Every structure is written in structure tokens, then in C-alpha cells.
Image 1 (cartoon, rainbow, N blue to C red):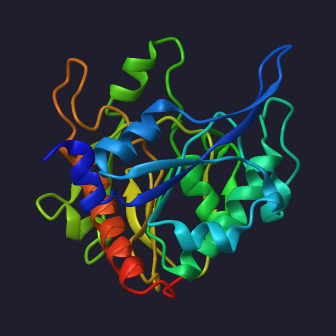
Image 2: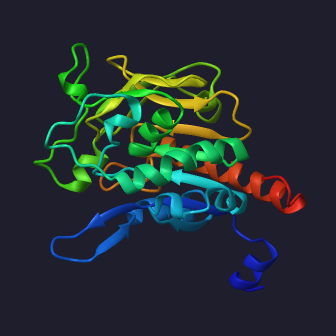
Length: 274
């Protein structure tokens, strides 16, 4: 049996990957998504990636989520516009993507309502919190008591993502503790300037940084896997560039993929499930 024939007999779960809206200098506007996120869905979670353009209310959200078996929310250079969480206006150096906000925030709520498995990464982590009623620190490094969680931009991209910047303490009894039961503390990379100020109602803390910043949460009453992490498990989850493998990152993607396959089985057995 060929790989193509096998896919027809055992179709891959369809996993959405949200895109950013970006206008390159003196170029037409583009919808863009990092290759690492698409590959982490295809290879790490074992799904069929579907890039979702940042079209805002032009996308029929309910129709989309009815077809999805999972949704991965990506990181981005941009930040959520603070009016979405009643925050103060951003400083001039903060990059925004209102088209992505208009697409992803309602998509998060619809996906959770429909029982679509969710994995939020970095900006996606922040989007899930804001979409459900939480707020953000716009500059964590300027808040008393917190460390600087930003990457060292004087180093290469590989160094920035491969650097295990700080530990996170996994909270007992949660999603992360279940998929990673061997250790309570795990080292992770750190490439973010913003972070959770107020956790949204209905969210459960899954991991805390060594300075107390929330680094992971889950949705308490979600029908399926719904986890968000502030670090980047999509980066070299399968191998490290000179630092070995990242099995913790791989475990997160595999757990997400397993949930997507379960959702697919349920959706195909009952077309009215969504």
C-alpha cells in the first residue's frame, strides 16, 4: 500500500494554523505563517495543516470550526491591540495586527464551544487569555518582580530558540502533569515581551515561571484538549541544533495530535457533532 493510498484509508486530522496579516515594504499585503508551525502540525502532531487567513468577519467561523479537528495558534512579532482587554494604549514600538485579532479572538471562542482541540503558542497563548476575558502586561520586563523574558536579539535565531532560558514548575493534576509526569520542573525557551496580567475566568494554571509569571494554562471545562504555553514547543521539537532533543516539546505536540485524531473520529462518526 502506498502512502497516498494509506492516507485515503486513514485520513489525517485537519488542523488549522492561523496566519498573520503582513505588508512587506513596498509590496502587496500577504497572509503569512512560520514554516515551523506548519511543520510542527504536519510532523509533530501528525495532522494535515490548513492555513487560516486573517480575514476577520469575512470568514464564516462556525462553518470553519465544524470542519476542523484541531487548531494551533501561532506566535508572531505583533501584539494584540490593548483595547481588546481594556489596556492602556501601546507604546509606539509595539507592532499590531488588527486583522489577526479580528479573526483569531472569535475563532478561539468558537473552537472551544465546538470542542475543537486547541494549542496556543506565545501570541496564541495571549490570544486565548484575551478572547476569554483576561488581560496582559504589555511589557513584562517593566513590571516589578518579573524577569526579562525577551530573547537576546544579538544572538542567532537558533541560539534564541534553543536557549533554555528558565524553568517552569508544572502544576499538579493538570494537562501538562498528565503528559509529562516524570518531573515537576522543566527548562524552556523564552522569547516574549508580554505576559498574563489577569487570567481569564475558566482557565487553569498549568505552569509558572521561576518568577511567578503564568507560562501555561488550560481551559477547565473544554470538551477536548485546550492548552496554551508561553514558550515555543514548535521549535526543533524533534531535534536540537547542538543541544540534543526536546522531548518535553515533542510530548506537547503528540498530546495535541492525539486529541485531534480523537476529534476526527468523533466528527466522522457523527457529522452533527460540531
